[in-house]
Amino acid sequence: MKTAVKDVMTTRVIWVRKDASFRDLAAALRRHRVSAFPVLGDGDKVIGVVSEADMLTKEAPLGGFSGLLHHRDAEKARGITAGDLMTAPVVTVAPEDTVSHAARLMYTHKVKRLPVVDANGHLVGIISRADVLAVFDRADEDIRREVVDEVILGEFLVDPRAFDVKVSDGIVTLTGVPETNEVGHEIVRGIRHVQGVVAVRDRLSYLSS
Image 1 (cartoon, rainbow, N blue to C red):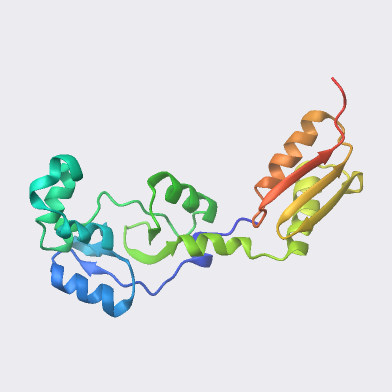
Image 2: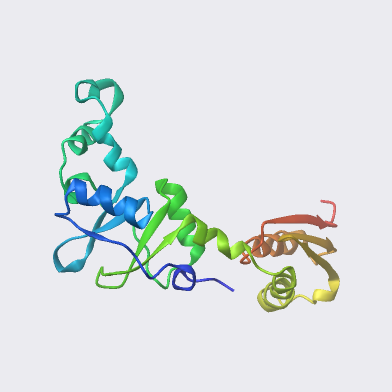
């Protein structure tokens, strides 16, 4: 089972226009208790994200940018609208993308949330780190059933009775004797991609080379 972004995203999203003032942004952050907003431009398309971190550049000393802040941060410190302050280009995901894909983007780009947009670039939701981690809240028995039925039998056409599969707190322990060492390694790799698996303990008995 591959959980899609649309299954875990938040659909009620607080957003701002690119011409929203700094004061309006600060008030909205406090009022809605969020830490960032998607920014909408022409045609209601997502063009950036403005966060508390972007706005905090206002507190930096304007004379010390050479050592403290990059040139872009200096521009943000002088900004007065969401369009001036936002981070762009924006990294987005589609509703049909997998949660694992969203997680990779968050890790690669070091962001805490991603706007979710449709094929026309319109905002339909937002997915956060907490939403991504929610997929690990899956029953051990559900994980075991997928490992046995969809990975070992369905993907590799191997008799599941050749293995003992135990799952505890999302950790899969696999014992048994694979047909070949290569098949054993492939099965372990396949299990690692099962939704909700925290780790795989490979206890297979491999043939000596």
